[in-house]
Length: 314
Image 1 (tube, helix red, strand yellow):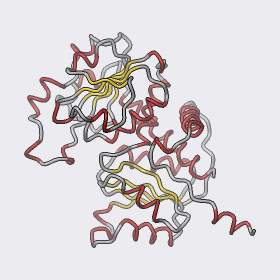
Image 2 (image 1 turned 135 degrees about the vertical axis):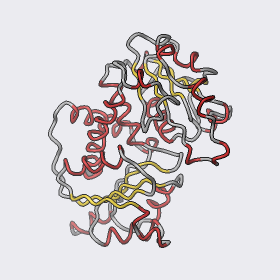
Image 3 (image 1 turned 60 degrees about the vertical axis):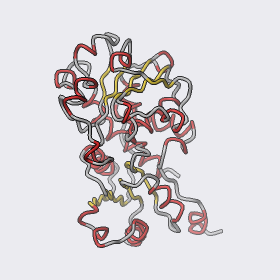
Image 4 (image 1 turned 90 degrees about the vertical axis):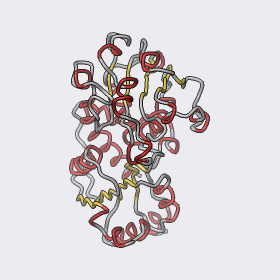
């Protein structure tokens, strides 16, 4: 068989969700992310990468752009509102068009859960896909950078307790994070938030393990915690009339210094951003010495560089 025929016979590798990654893949991605963060040189990849974002983004979009540039890739960024999608073009047709132009990998953020999996199953080309967030279902690159940030901070996974607080039900960050943290053997994960954003059925719906617990209050969630991840209220995911009242939400669920005092003295603070200051987290905590929020932002470039290296190493 000719080389070109052999290459075409191999199914393209995609980065779609945590569950589809093998233990070796996860270990390799996490190890490589941390190595890049410590100064390892990115492997040069002469590829063309397109960022296709159907939802607004700053951190994810820019970090994917910087990661591609670190690999000397050609980078094109498209916002769906300014693309043919605004004229009714489907995601499949957009992907086929970009691949015909020579794009090697497509990084997609999409409001519909499962959109990337559906696209991957219908592709008849070698185009490789990266999930930059699909609806409320998954955000695997965020999970990778969060895990790398925690590991770089010295977190002892098997003996640690991490609290995830806020709009759990609508959070793709929480869902992918849970999947990865459980795979890494995290000792205990506590989920907390108002009932409307954390329904009783969620733990079973998400097939959570016995180390994932529901906390009834912010105090219960953060008590003796080694890390606390606060989440943004996903206003765009539900009807405006159902939005929680900001003042009422802040009284019960805004992380303040008094809550941090209940956690371990070296407790790490994370937030995937963007932050609604004063509603989800007090500025003195978000900007305080225990905050790893900007560390997460920095780690995002390294994590996404590692993802591109892994994608093209096939």
